[in-house]
Amino acid sequence: MSIQPFTIAIPPEILSDLQSRLGQTRWPDQLEGAGWDYGTNLEYLRELVDYWQHKYDWRVQEAWLNQFANFRANIDGLGIHFIHEKGKGPDSLPIIITHGWPSTFFEMLKLVPLLTDPARYGGDPADAFDVVVPSLPGFGFSDRPASRGWQLSHTAELWARLMADELGYKQFAAAGGDFGSGVTRLLALAHPNLLIGIHLTYLGFPTLHADRSNLTAAEQQYLQAVQQWMMREGGYAMIHSTKPQTLAYGLNDSPVGLAGWIVEKFQSLSDCDGELERSFSKDELLNNIMIYWVTETLNSSIRTYYENVHLPPPLQAGERIKVPAGVALFPKEANRPPREWGERSLQIERWTEMPRGGHFAALEEPELLAEEMRTFFRPLRNR
Image (cartoon, rainbow, N blue to C red; front, side, top):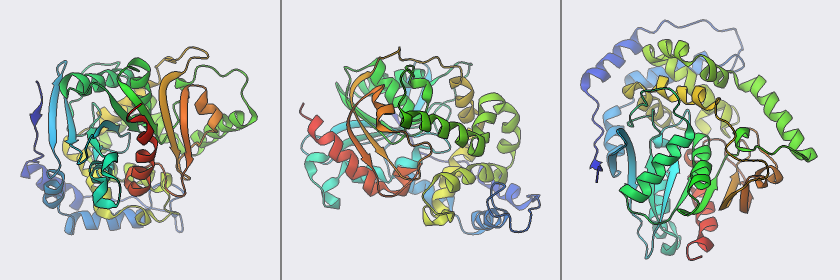
């Protein structure tokens, strides 16, 4: 087996360099009363950076991250970092949960104890999972693909190898949002025999839906909303999809630039009513940013957009993924499609309109998401 235990241990010189860069920030101006209308709010970012400099303690956070069972596996020459926590139940169901951008594996960690040990939180031990949370290639502590053309379908193949060949699971479940939703669906498309079911919190990536004939009125409204959203909020994705290298020079060099680029998405895509820290603590925001900073993976992470805009539709007209699917739509998620849109490509067995939460559901509302996942997978365990 290629799997080896992994310990996160950032060299002190990287942390010292970070402090120097934070202290030498050259701040831009901002229009009076701009709020977040023009992008990341200056007052809030100054407050966050002051906390980063004087109160945030990476070593404390690093120790917490290392309390999870961290590993690295070498699959076809690419090193993949992942968390693997065994369930505390009579017959734990293995599940691989995939993050997206601008998240890291950190987004999913609140789910881990809720899924591995449901009895501890008032649940049924029969609902326990063996949880695998990998870092996408080019993200965090996974290796960066060294050549062009690495698409989500390649990652799906890696996940099949990781779960079946490296970890020895004959069948398993899969879940994810954002890029993780795309990887999960492509995994189910390519390897339906390995999947007992998939759970999704996001149904973007219209390229996964090849058949657009006979759209309902609700579906047409949805596609119009996607276009409007892209014009209003999608500038970052267009840059990532067209000229990611140009952006990377600034964000790989400036920690404040990196923070400004990332926290704006957490503010605009979460259920925080415009107040970022209603949904996330400063430590949570900075943990996610730090994983990008200390690994220098901003550039390799955003290249994912560039590679996948060239992705041809993997589904033929009328073809569907033949694996049971559960969908949990959170109210502040971007581009919420109608159920019939999902049913064009998915075998949907549970569709839930969640009461609160946004794009980063595992970090915002882990208890709600964990309970929804338990409920969906419960009847599939012995099917």
